[in-house]
Image 1: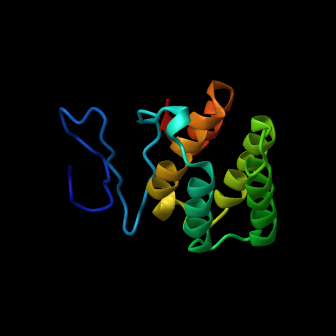
Image 2: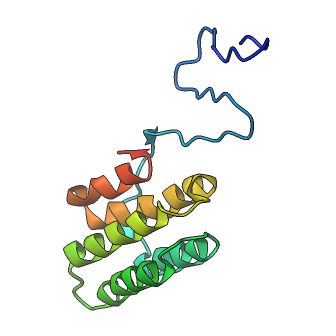
Length: 138
């Protein structure tokens, strides 16, 4: 990488699967991080949603009330004896939408991926788009 003047060009070899970010105080989210999902029957949905709630509480989300209501919808539906996974998935899509608006989203992306991956496994293949929304390739 050159370091002279305003030239921020990158010259490198063998950096496949890596990120190169230029500029001062820059950050980036690596998209398409491959994750192996746990078996759906092993997922503690209530525990994962509680952990997701705790993580989201750390973030600076502009529409915190909407995010909270979406997460509450997911929690309420998941707690039913026969939860409607499409209802939970739809609520989680709203959660991700509001979380992505947070000014510190990139700083929490990896932790979000850890919370979302098990939930996506439990929801099933119809909901892999939630994983993709937070940069997980499934």
